[in-house]
Length: 154
Image 1 (cartoon, rainbow, N blue to C red):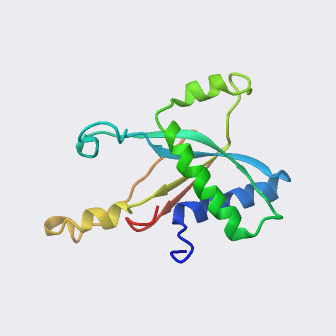
Image 2 (tube, one colour; image 1 turned 135 degrees about the horizontal axis):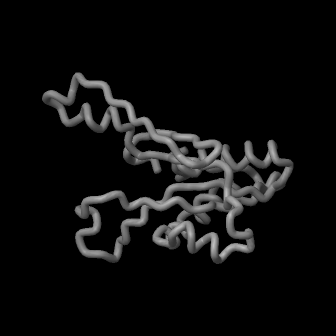
């Protein structure tokens, strides 16, 4: 993975796209993703408090004729370019699409987190070190997949 300069996020998106493609019989798949909507153009954006994420549809063309590593590199480039739309509300995306209002843009959501909440809090030490934490989330999507990696993973 490091040798090819691919992120865990790219590998998981690729695996999820292939699974959806095989299950649906279509090489053109769409799934929901979480984007960081914290604008890098704002001064001190990293120190701002709040939840700066956005859920957006990510369209992937699974190319079985392309070598896997080349396809994954394309996917990573596509994801990097996609980040430009991190601030676009999902409702606006729906408005821009050809999909009729009231119809879901996607049925599954892939969430790749850089930090596992338990490890991050325990790393604070002191009273936090021996506690166990669990994040219980519920989405409005029929299927949500969560993955956790190291801070330098995604």
